[in-house]
Each structure stands twice: as structure tokens, then as C-alpha cells.
Picture 1 (cartoon, rainbow, N blue to C red):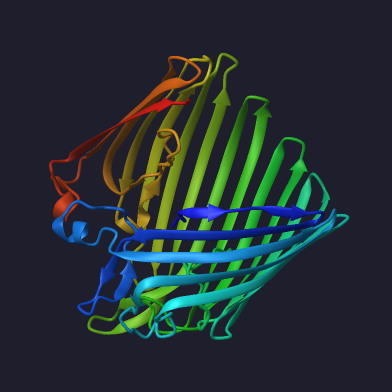
Picture 2 (spheres, rainbow, N blue to C red):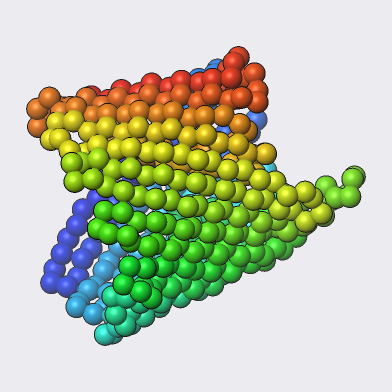
Length: 404
């Protein structure tokens, strides 16, 4: 989400005070009684039902942050108050039994960071209006530029609610989660560097599509070998395991573990004339207990040009083959200015994309991007109002920028 309003910064010595206020309309799904049951965040206003939900509610947010900072220590106190024009009352389910049901809410917190030689500490503890307390703390040890160790603990109780909270977590909300993260960055050899972490998490209360408390882990490894200043190889491996409701055996529901593994091999090469190339092989494996293994892979090539002051461009081509949506592959594509695009692909097909930017003057520029996806295993794409009768889709984006 975003805020629309005003903020100010007042500073006196080592103390900074930042008050803020936001007042904006937003889209929401409403009950027959006119209460907000959920927030509509996709931004679409295409069909009559979507248009009806446009800006049908209002949110006001006000608060303040007071911060003290010196060379080693930072201390902060914050408070934020939310008010909605309607009652927020999501339909009661077991997993959201403790969710906020009110037209207003208040949170307060204290945060800190402290640096002592090669050690750094940071954390925050917040309290909701009902007294529920959430906390997260981090420690980092960096003895040299070749090694760094980080550890983070978090505890977010099910009864804690914060409408705009952001914190390191596995879930999408700062709620119903306990976890411990350990990460290491090191360079064992002159041309070799590596980053790895493991995150252990537990959800003490049922979640959506998980009928009992559950747990899981997330492991990641990235190794890089630099052949020279302009070329390097990357090996990336990631496995995440969680639990979910599963119909097994037939007509019987159980909470079973599943894991997704992602493997990436990549070669990067840059030329002195402004061209750079990236060749990538991605693979995905999805395994659910008692079910067959699902697989997917994607081979892609990217070429970019940044050698001219007025012109720059990117080309992308990829072939993908994936058994199911669970083994979908992601690939980053350069998009128009101020936007980010990382589409996912499953099934069997190809993806082609080209983008460019031309600067007529230092203040006037034009950007364009065209993308084309063709599937070999289907005759339609999408569903409902987004259904395309055919096995191909082409998108065209343009962007003019005039600075004055």
C-alpha cells in the first residue's frame, strides 16, 4: 500500500521528530451491511463489480516517530493511529479468529540499533491496542570484509494486529509466527564468494488452507566464481518446506509437508563497448508427501546495451517447460522506468521480449517494451474476463518522460 498526505522533519541536535498524516480512499470488498470484509489490492477496475468497489472506503493514518542518534547508538519511539470510514470485519474463520475487527486501531513501538566495533545490534518491540506485543531482534558480526554472520529472532503472536507493519517474516502479515534466521557471507578463495542462510519458522495457530499449527524452513545458497573482471559464474540453490491441507487419501483431509526446490546456473559476461550478456538455466522441483515429483526448467538468454548516452536497450529470449503451476519459473525482465517486472511461466512455450529507451534531450526521453509469449500445450490463455482465445499473448508498453 501507500500513503497520501504530508510529513515533516524537525531536528534539534541529536533528536529528530517526524510527524505524519495520510488521508486516502481505497478499494475494499464490502458485506451486505456495508462493512469491509477484505482489502482489494489488485488495482483493477475493468468489470462492473470491480468499478463498484473503486474508492468505496477511506483510511486516515496519523503518527509520529521520535529518534535519538549518535555515532554508535540509535533509539526510537513511534506511535501510529488508523481510522477507517467503515467497520473492518472479515468473515470469521478459524485462521483469522484474532484478526482486527474494528474501525480504528493503534500501535506503538520502540526500536534501537547499536554498533560496537565489529558487532551490530538492532531490534524493535511493538504493542497493539489490545496489549499484544511483537518483537524482533538482530545481531551481526563482521570481523572482516570477507566474512559476515547475521542472526535474527522474531516473535509475532496471533493476537497482534498492525495494519501497515513490515518486518522480516515468512508470512504476509506480522502475526502468528515465530522464527530464527541465520545467514553467512564469506569469500573462501580470492575469486570465490558465497552467501547462505537458513530460516526456521513456526506458525502456532492455523492458517488459511492449513487446519492446524505448522512449521517449515527456508534454505538458500549462492556461490559466485569470478573468471575475470567482466565474467562470472553463479550457482544458486533454494529449498523451502511448509505444510498445507491435502486431500489424501481420497475424501480425507490431512496437513502434509511439501517442498519446492529451485536451482539456477548463470553465466554473466560484459564487454567494454557497453554490451552485457546473461545465460541462465533454471530448474524447479516440487514434492508433496505421497504424491509424484513435479518438474520444470527454463533456458534463457539476455543481452543488454548501455554503451550510448542517448540509447539503451535489452533483448530476452527463453524456452520453458513446466509440469504444473507449482513448478513455475520466474525470470526478471527490464521494464519501463519506475516499474518492476518478473513474470512466471508454466506449461510449455517460449518468451521473447525487447525494450529500449532513447533520450532526445537530457530532459525528454521515450521508452518502449514489447513482450510475446507463445504456448505449445494449450489453445487458450487465462480465465474469466482475462481469457485469451489462442495460444499467444503480446504486450506493448510505452512511456514518455519530460523533466521540467
